[in-house]
Length: 467
Image 1 (cartoon, rainbow, N blue to C red):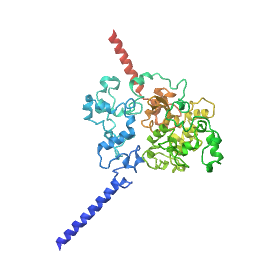
Image 2: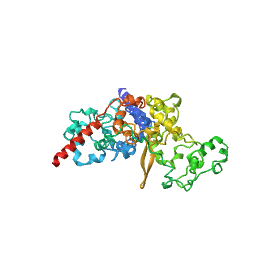
Image 3: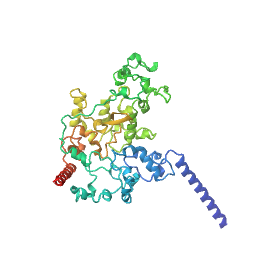
Image 4: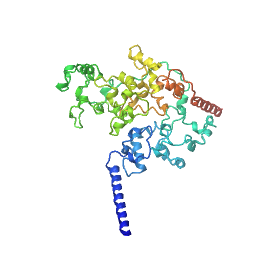
C-alpha cells in the first residue's frame, strides 16, 4: 500500500514538472509577454521596453555577449571617438590591461546593470559615485589643480562626463574660457533640407520632381478630392512647393519602386522615404524607441515625467507633432511639446526669455534662428553625415541625445548663443532649469577656473624651460 502511494506521488511530481517545464518553455520561446521573468523594474532609459524583453535578450539562452551586442546595436554609433572619450578601443590597448582588472569597461553592463533600481543612479549608472578613483587615483600628479578633490565630485554637472566629454575637456575649456555670457550674434543654424535637396542622391526625385504643385496636380484618389481644408493645408506647405504629392506619403513605394496600397493615415513609413535620417534618429529617442522595437507607439501615460492628462493616450508618431497635411514646424517646436509635457521646466517656458525670443521670430519681428523654442535645445540642428560625401544640418529628432547628462547639450545648442562658462553654470543650476532659464545662474562650476590654472602653469613652465 505504501509502495503504491509513493509511486503516485512520483507520477504526480513528474507530471507537474513536465507541465511546469512546458509552460516555462512556451513563455520563453513562444509567448509575447515575458515579463514574468523580469527580475526587477527597468531604468528610466529603458522602461518603455518592459514588454519587449527580446529588445535586449535577443537570444533567450544567450549570455553576456548577447546583452553586449544589444547595447551596441542601439548605442554603438555614439560609443566611438570623437563622441566617446572612453571608447572600447582605449581599453583594448594592452597598456590599459591593469585598469580592466578593476572595472571591465569593455562591457556596458559593468556600469549599467538593468533591473536593479536599488543601485541605479542618474544616467542609469550602477557603479558607486566615486568610481573614477580606480583609474584616476593619481590625477593630481599631472593636474595640480585637482589635488585634494573628492572623487565623488568628478561627474558633477559641468565637470566630467564619462562618455561624451566633448564640451568639458581641457583644451576646449581653455579655448572658450574667456567667452562672453551672451554671443554678439546669438543665432542657431537654419534648417537646410530644402536648400540642399538637389544634392541628396537618395531623394526620390524621379517620382517627385522638385517643382511646385497646384491643386490640379493632386494625385489622391477621387474620393479624397473634395476636402478643402486638406487641400489648403497641403498647398501652403513646403511639400506642395517642392513637388511632394499625396501619394508620396499615403502610398510609400516598395523596394521595386512600385506604389503600395493607399493608407488613409500613414505612419512613420510614409515619412521615411524622404526623411529617413530624421525617422532613424526619432526611433533612437524616448519618443520613438517603442516603434523601433515593433511595439505600439509611446503614449504620455507611459512616461515617468509629469504629463498633461488630456494627452495621456495620444500616440507619438511623426504626425503627433507635425500635424497631417500642414506639417507646421513652428507648432512642432513648442506647442506640440507643451501639449504633452507638464513638468515644471516645460510649464515655465512660456514666461521665459527664450519664449520671448521665439515669439519675436515666429511673429516676423526678429531674424530666423534668433528664437529659442523647446526644439532649439532638445532637438538641436546638428551637422550630420547623410552619406559618404555629404553632410547637412539635421534637426536631431532623437530628443534624448542631449538630455542626460545635460552637458551634452552645450555644444549642439547652448554655444550658439551663450559662452561656455555661462552654459556650464546654467546647466548645473537646477532652480534655473526649473524656471526655464529665467535669470542668471546662482551656481558656479570651477571647470574653467581649473583649466585656466592648468593653462597658466603650462605656459609658466614652458617659459621657464626656454630660459
